[in-house]
Length: 228
Image (cartoon, rainbow, N blue to C red):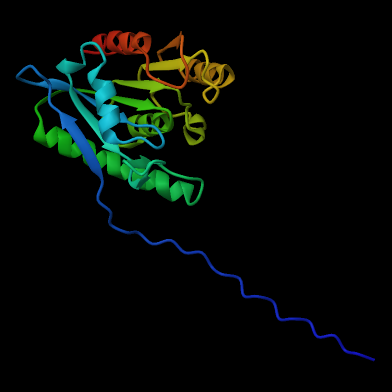
């Protein structure tokens, strides 16, 4: 009779997290007019960088009257063609920790911008695609009074939907008709939620896909004009 030995079980690795210091990067374009200016802080999409987002903020009609800040995601990587350094705001790994890190990062960026530039006290956050979730989180969690949110091609993050104590600022939501990622169903769900939460919300569905267009830039300009 042969005795079969069972191999010892492999030890289970324990997962740990530790805080680390990392430097972020942001760009600032001061308002063209002298004196106090409102502050527009933006967040790029996945695989983009702060320079690209700042260029989009600059194209919003009336944007030159605002001090524009484009924040680059902490998690940098090379673009597919390796010609640019781009970023991602987070992945599903250690998601809650990444959210906390990002919110603290934005708080520090805005605090630094407020110290360095004379402002009117009006602050608006703007996000595109993956950066939309950051715009919502920054507006409601980063510790600075926010007058508005511009959300293009991205949805409300799930953790904010379950907080009944949020006082929502005005929100502008945009979506391209051909956008296969931020679908009509996602937009409708966001609008229904925000309206039920008491948020003053406006929306625009424009001809295009997952992108900025002149129609949306014009609507964003009108939205910003109504907040100053």
